[in-house]
Image (cartoon, rainbow, N blue to C red):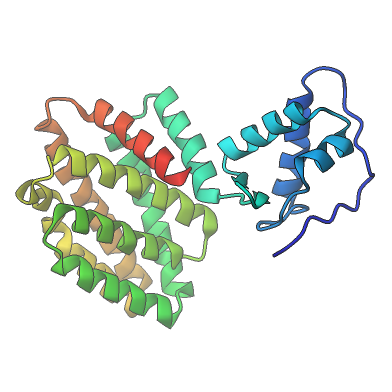
Length: 265
């Protein structure tokens, strides 16, 4: 297990006022800069208090703040560890942005289309043979599933693998977040009924298969065409599903965000 190794001064001088916020900001900077790498065990509360010349409650408040944004995890009986969970950080920030700006689900689909098109283009160039095989296997599993929960989970896996195959962390993270949101809402709007879910997912089966075939052939032009076709079909089908849901999409999105934030915490 990696241990904390601080090469800076033994103590840090803080300004008066907002001590916990200053401790949190200093530790955040070190985590984001990589000085405190993922997996490192932080010093004890007492050691941190001595280092920053503050009280134990101040350190606990700072650590709670870091844990709330998924930078640190407190493991009872084992200590405090740097996690820097990217998915959790991204979910917290992006869900807040979407909710504050009241961005609608169909607008999110507009964003997702060019992202997945770019991901498909990059996957044609950078995906490994192992990644393409995993994508094909995920597609086979997805097409065999008969339960809504299973289809939703496998669709998330399939689209996540395609995003990861781009080898672009920013695109992959954003794609996976938006896909997760879309699936959560679509699953709720379908009422958990397989016949309703198939109105969205079943009609996209051929598009997905042709997209995988294009990726396996490393055919950038065909992969781009199929990615566009897939997402335009998705938008039409999801739009129809939402239109039949009595304008409850906003409430569904709110509940989806809560579930996603709990899952990433």
